[in-house]
Image 1 (tube, rainbow, N blue to C red):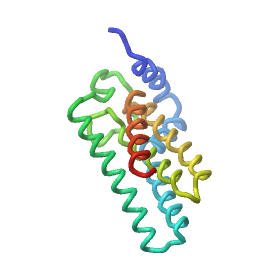
Image 2 (cartoon, helix red, strand yellow):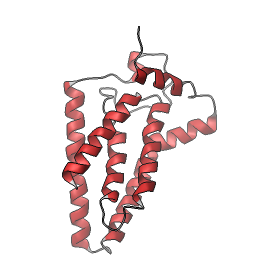
Image 3 (cartoon, helix red, strand yellow):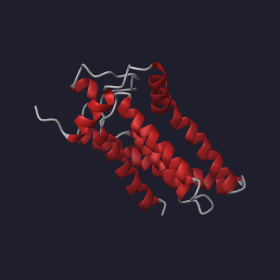
Length: 173
């Protein structure tokens, strides 16, 4: 069987799963929990941007929720129309160090979409483009951690970032 570039990169990353306890714990944190931390930081950043004025804050949060709802809806539609299995379904020998909520779709990665959307949303705030660099850094770490955790192929991450970038530029720019 000829492996794609995505499969090859996945297996290269998956070799490191289960080797070092500290590395696995870091991967688990970034693959599962870090998205909530950057989400809370983004809410704080948005509130700070509008000086916590309730009307403006609500408007920006609503704008983010609409864009992310659209992106997740497109992700789920794509996953339903063009199903791609998670690595552990295709290759049972894969080391999966976190258990995803479901195995019904792998492409695109919802974690990659949401972490990238948070970074783009902060980037498009007039007062925060320089701070957005740290959000992009953490979004990339979260996305890559999903590959090391054994739940996504690199293609899933790339597709998630493409979808997030498209939605962000069309919806928020």
